[in-house]
Amino acid sequence: MLKQVQHDEQKKMKAEEQLFKMTAKTMAGLEPILAKELMKLGAQKVEAHNRAVSFEGDKGFMYKANIQLRTALRILKPIHTFKAENEVQLYGKIFEMPWEDIFGLENTFAIDSTVNSELFNHSKFLSQKTKDAIADRFRDKFGKRPNVDLEKPDVKINVHVRGDDFTISLDSSGESLHKRGYREETGVAPINEVLAAGLVMLTDWTPPINFIDPMCGSGTIAIEAALIANNIPAGYFRNEFGFEKWKDFDADLFQVIMDSAIKKISDDDRTRIYASDINRQDLGKAEENIRNAKVEDTVKTFRSSIEDFTPPPGMGTVIINPPYGERMGENVNELYKSIGDVFKKKYAGYDCWMITSNMEAVKHIGLKPTRKITVFNGPLECRFLKFSIYEGTKKIHKLEGKEKKEPEA
Ligand SMILES: C[S@@+](CC[C@H](N)C(=O)[O-])C[C@H]1O[C@@H](n2cnc3c(N)ncnc32)[C@H](O)[C@@H]1O
Image (cartoon, rainbow, N blue to C red; front, top):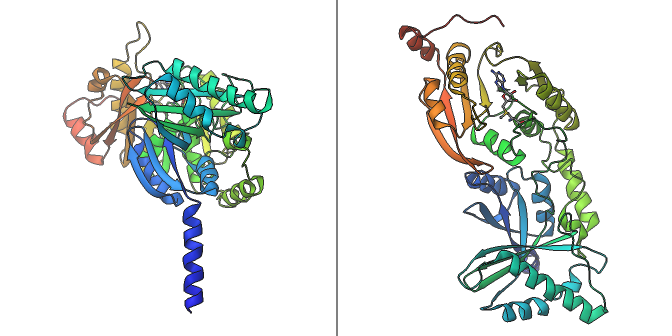
């Protein structure tokens, strides 16, 4: 009995030794969703910060997080922290690190720096100094140095300084995780895949309830919803992750984790997701992307205006990402008014959500949002607005004498 307790205790200590801290980066407004995702996956010590969530896990968990997380842009693994007050100290600290244990001469590398310091104010300069110190260390040891590739490096190194506190991290994701691998075709203003997944998760939509994007463009929001419905990992279609180029990459462990994620794909045949758009070209792109993501059984497409599209009866969730009127001369007030009318007339029982940066145009919808969440679509500060449509919403609207004749579907 005592032996068993000791054995369990030792096992627990060993597992804890293998845990390390990581930081998943995300977009403003999605931090609570990412924290929830991490907790569900089994991360430890999950803490939400500004556009990031820190957590602990082991190597296998790092692979799993990269494969599964829908709302993370990248996952950084801090490998060293130190203090430096000037470039000479920084160079020395970086030079001391055993870079040759992390990657090889055959790999390309690049540095990305973020600065929040009065001592250092140029991120480019920090990246340059870090690159020099790493290259010099390799040259010192092997007479040669690995090449820099700013476009598509094998190994991405992140330097973060706050005051004189430096954190050096490896970017375990490589290319940003929003690059899922299914989207080749995009329309005029495609939404980032991480934001699209985050919006779907913010609505609390649960399959198999109906889901509709009646202004789907290249289909990103509908596809992310379908990946969720079928439990298809966000990273399933990616060709590679940053950690695959590290010297400690464990290909067998990665395969076990990928296989286990694949086994959980559910082939959901109950959920119906509807994606429609007025523009034939955009819809063609959506259809191509839907096929690439292998969700054509879940997502049904229609070429239709939002005004003409008739949703299936019952309950459901709608997300629309309409034009924001950002383009010169574009006036979207009429369009937003017509969206409001359609919600009231056709979507009783539905939760209708809209993301937009145009709060002036929102006034023309003629409905009061029941929730407002601030999110960013690229550089644009947006609101993600919820309009709950009940039978009564339509009646009240009729009483106000604003009802128009319903168009034929
Ligand atoms: C900002 S884009 C949507 C982008 C999309 N979320 C994506 O990821 O590609 C807005 C879309 O609304 C469509 N649209 C504009 N007016 C419409 C209308 N009255 N009915 C349906 N679609 C409309 C446009 O064709 C365009 O594809």
